[in-house]
Image (cartoon, rainbow, N blue to C red; front, side, top):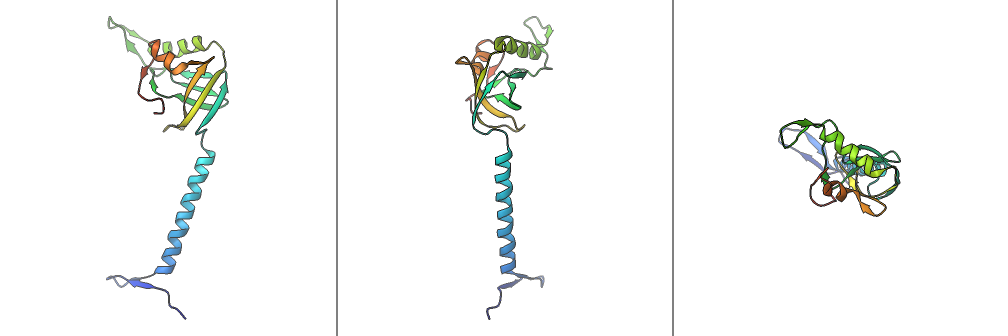
Length: 151
């Protein structure tokens, strides 16, 4: 009969190496299963969504209960206050959102998602009748470009 490998440390405690190996393998399997479950149940990681959006703010919309963060741009938050050239305060976040609502005009959007951000929103580029909405926000002065559209 083969005896299990046992290792004893200087403290006098001994560990059955076979049992420890089984525990580690079991933990690895559980971690992989949790990661797979998180991937399967996460918001759309890559795909296409179409529909008339609910516009949350200047860079976040919702289509079919999926929040989409327009990637590659930074728009003011809805509650953000900006200063104009004369130092007067104005609600730039509300204005950016409202201009996006006006531009959308109830039309269908086609969004191509590429991942998920730290707030579990899908990241994507969206188009209205072929026009890149992300780029329109920047061209119109309602958002700044923040780099590549895959953020």
